Amino acid sequence: MPWRRDSQVACSFCVLLLSLGAARADAPLLSASVHDGDSHAVGQEEVRIENVGSYLTSNSGEFEFRAPQPPGRDSAVRFRVRNWVIVKPCELINGRTFLPATGTVDIKVYQLGDNRLIDAAYGALLSQCLVEEMASHFEPKRGSAAHSQGFMTPHHFGGNQRRDAAIVSVSWQGSFRKVSASELPLGRNDFLAKKSKELGFSAEQLASALEEWAKSPGDSYHRGLGALYEGKYTDAAVLIAESIRSSERALTGRYVSLARAEYELLHFENAKSALVRALEVHPGDEIVQADLNLVSEAMAKSAAETQVEQPPVQGQNTPGRPTSSPSASATTLIAVAAAAILVLFVLLYYAYKRLIRALEKFDKVDLTSQVQASTATLECPETVTHKATVTEAVVAAAILFRLYNLLRIVGRRPPDNVVRIIDRVRSNEVHETAGSGT
Image: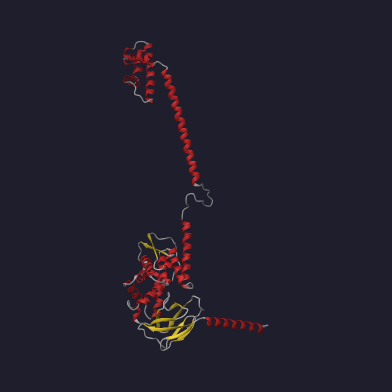
């Protein structure tokens, strides 16, 4: 029936209100005090805590409020003071902080449009806060996520033994191209246009003040944030890592700023490590968690692109292509080489055996008498008058040819007279003389 359904809804709503009231009752009662840049109390001003409520400060600048979460829940809140600019606290956004379990939250403010906010000396807190806020706005990487080229040197964080154990930063020495006005680092065009309205200045005034602050001297963290603001991500990574090593306590803004510098250098592993350390400081930080999710997505994209572009490694199996292992290929090559050596050895052995048989055969023939008998005839062919003498000369020439070749094979030099006769036979002198005698 309709009345029963309405009653059930009403009961559920009452139960929800009671549970919320019980949760708020369990939350601790905290206090806060508001003071300006001259340390004067800011009284009778409205202070609003986002998603919690509004409060009015006393004449001493104090007010009490109940935390939105019970003790043990790590959640951030953001304070706003009407017509004032909060410069402290600043956890990645001015006015944002993580509430303590007990105690008082100190809030430092300047009036809206106060020139001290953009002064290089007085506005250091705000400038640092603005750059940290810009750094925390990670943007998805477009296009290829391929790694840059350069020389990397590892830097280990120091200063705290527990913090030192895990995180390693990598600085990058390389060249950087000059960015155009439409491609300013950290996407600061839109940020400055929006933030300048909250502070009571023009975007040009705020940009000029931040540029002056970035170039001003300071400690390693100041100079690191200045380099980050100018897009000098190499210097920023080195300087911010140095500030973390020298810091006695972990600060979320330093880890996030370092992670942004590494992220812009496409060092996704280092950026992830820094963000993980930031989450160790405040596990419930939604801004850091969102940045970590973007870095993890960039890492996955980079790994996928690297896997697609990398050529197949020799010996690595690829789809549709059978491959053999390196050990099998080496075994086959050794077997072929061994077979070739064996064949060569057999051929040399048979050549040697034939040479030995030829030497034994010539040892049985008395060539000396035949050569001596026909040497004079061959040296003086014009005296040949009989056919038999010509025949002997031709036979002697043939014998001398074989003797000459045999002596060359065994590496000995033939006698000079034999060489001279062979040369004459080669020039057909003997054959021509034999033909005229016949």
